[in-house]
Length: 451
Image 1 (cartoon, rainbow, N blue to C red):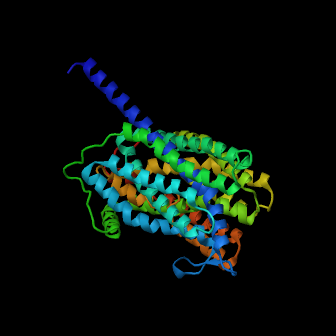
Image 2: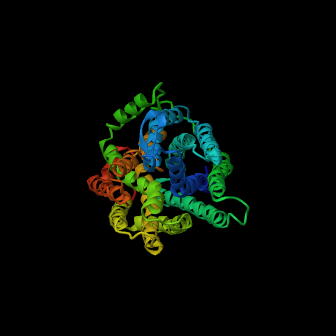
Image 3: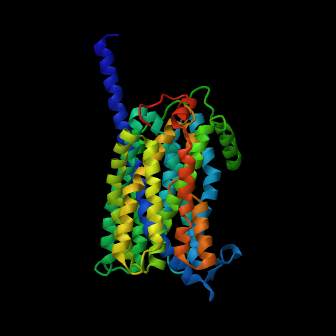
């Protein structure tokens, strides 16, 4: 084969890889609107209000006959979603690795989640049970889709490109979240001009996130391609999600350093996701901030997170992903501690806090994803990412559970928010102890020059 032919083949492969990468970015563009508009901004305060409307004289609702303080219902629903996720994600990851057919599974999960989100338009009156059910289905569907989406990263980006590709994906997501939040803010603040009530405006915002999710999922489904599973692929089908998860963890025990990183990630990301999902409840219920203020604050987070994700990606090229993540955890700890002391009815200080979160949010998540991709043995991407995904995108259960229990026991959202500091401190300590270069070698992957 001539040198020109080799060069042309390499150029064609690079062009195809870039095309897949651009398609891959668009799933973040599609589904991040759910995380932003639904999970972070509107659903928490709105579902809490619906639950309070349905509550008894003591402020409790009774799903399945269990007394739950209405102010804790949303947090408990987020926690419950991980139960369904644990059952389904390992099976989906194993099926993807075994068959190599990720796209059909991605499509099924994405459109089930989009349909559940669109169905939130019908969440009115005292339908708190419907709201909890749709939240659980949408969150679990997002979790499964993200397992499959993340597992493409090692296949579409060589080691030296992964930090940048992962960061761009998060940046796409935050850019989409910003764009849709602007439209949400216009509709919500001027709902009278559009001839709709405030409640109807919120329900339109919720449903539009589902329509957006479904529409833009068409782009990655067109551009991403399935790979044939290796004949010795370790993917396994199981009749039970818990059994599959246990099998995955047993397999990961042969990669103890990968497991050590995953444990650190599960802990600190649990804190991150709980802050994301509960911040609007904290702002509305404890600080007495208006919905418009909360939307503006989250919009500020989204805009700054775009630059933060790209900026931390550049820092990782100089200092390595691990050191950059550790620095972000210090920033998270300080920001969360400051949040405890925020005065009520003071939007300016809430905006300052939102700015701090935005600068570290995207980079923390993007670099964690790319770093983990180096620690996954070839052929096990979807299976390993199913374990990784259990703490991603608001699927964590321990953080929301701690948040909800703390509020239920103390009646104070300030106590609930400060209880989350432990996740960042413990996560920092565990991550600092992981020798990532050795972990990459043990997984059988090439070690990047800077990691």
